[in-house]
Amino acid sequence: MLDWSCRSHLQRKVRAESLGGCFLRILLVEDEMSAAKILAKGLREQGYAVDIAADGDAALYQAAINDYDVVLLDVMLPGRDGLEVCRGLRAMSSPVPVFDADCAGQFSRPGRWTRRPAPTTT
Image 1 (cartoon, rainbow, N blue to C red):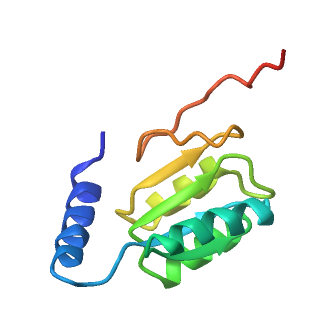
Image 2: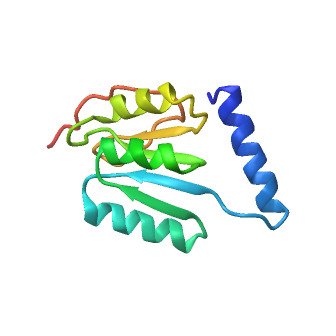
């Protein structure tokens, strides 16, 4: 479940959109550039503003200089992994909701960090 600071952050943004304001600004943190470009293209076609960070350090830098409404975060990153990035965002007192993705491209609930077993191949 979203904590109150994240929830109110998104509610203000949704109200602004309904009044003709700006759309959500998303930080996409993905080290696989082909996947990042495809996902960013789809989100932009839906009217979202998307910035891409290829690693944890770039993600924290982007989050420090920009206000994001949502962070889509890959778990497996070079350098700082997704958990360290999430901790870094919280250390900056950022209320932004974070969705973390596993290697199968499934997103967990916002604001939670879950460990999933590795996918099995048959």
